[in-house]
Length: 170
Ligand code: SF4
Image (cartoon, rainbow, N blue to C red; front, side, top):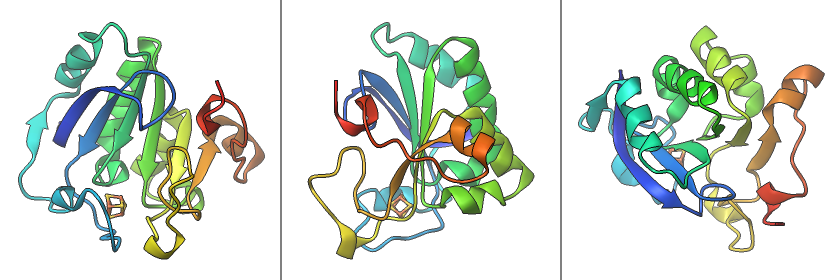
């Protein structure tokens, strides 16, 4: 069961191509200048089964990718891992934002490590207002990284995506 702040279809700002974005409810990071402060509280939100979220996503035939956003998806790691499994079984590219860094998640709880292993791309790190840049693609501040999760797990250290569709090059 997931607790969601919302689902947005046809998103073009949370990753390349037409995507669905799934917003978790609840975030422990409380970054100054956060644009989604309504998702901080762990109260409220809408509780949904992972299968129901998949059904809604699959009702959009244009979406080829899904991005988890927040809130903090890794605060509900077990539920988002179940959703990631369903999405991968159906051929979606799965990305996730997180206020945690790759290194924190790599050494995080078992549930966080399980979710990390299931996603393709991680945009990591807290939003740091003094590092805000409007020229960044899919990121808010320059400390955040776009991480190739599979290659990073193979190498045991962060491999950033520095070119291609995740950098706005089509
Ligand atoms: S991690 Fe994201 S949702 Fe959470 S406070 Fe920071 S910017 Fe907002």
